[in-house]
Image (cartoon, rainbow, N blue to C red; front, side, top):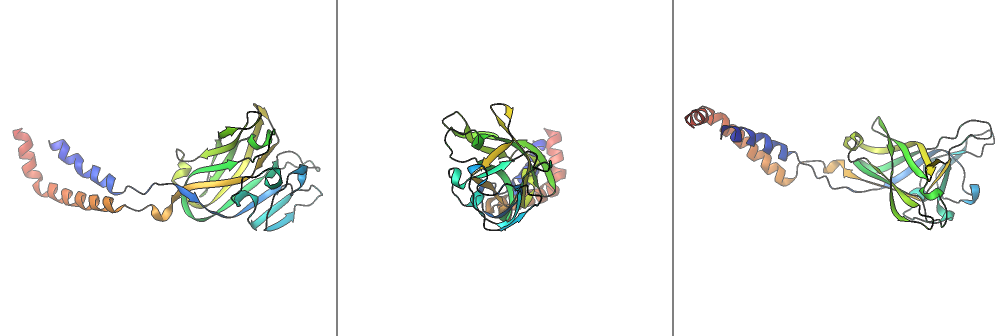
Length: 243
């Protein structure tokens, strides 16, 4: 009896801080890319309306800043509107290491990052992505993606999901996500290319991470219960001894 009463208040207190943990789509307002081939490279086309800067040395590698485009236009398209990325040495021998920075429309606890490779028939590149380093709020974690979606004509699943819900990254509120150190493969063999037609982010808005109305009621009940236990603790001890 005594143990039950003593455990009641902590339980109510824990319930009182329950948050609205319902994941919703987080809008990608703009995104930046470091080290990407331009649209048209290898026959792949994409759109971007921000600033495009040549990295120089005739490498045909560019940096994109402050814009929107194929990665957040809401369209999962074919080769004409899907961004091709490469991970190889440029003509001058320097490694090409793409980095994508997503700027969100608010602060979220991120649960999933969903990457769509594109609807390109009989092609392995849309499903080649299998890992990346995810960075947010000053923390980073190397993660493998989970293949998802219906396989294409050659058995490749073209959707990759980075699940942050079970990671410490999912506990960090952020309005910016950085994806880097990408890895890709073709049936277990390393590949130096991957494609992205669309990126979607799901998370819990930071402003929603407040006690629910019912939780506030539990908090009040817990406070009343705690005060009552303090007041009647001597009598409870006597009652327990007599039991």
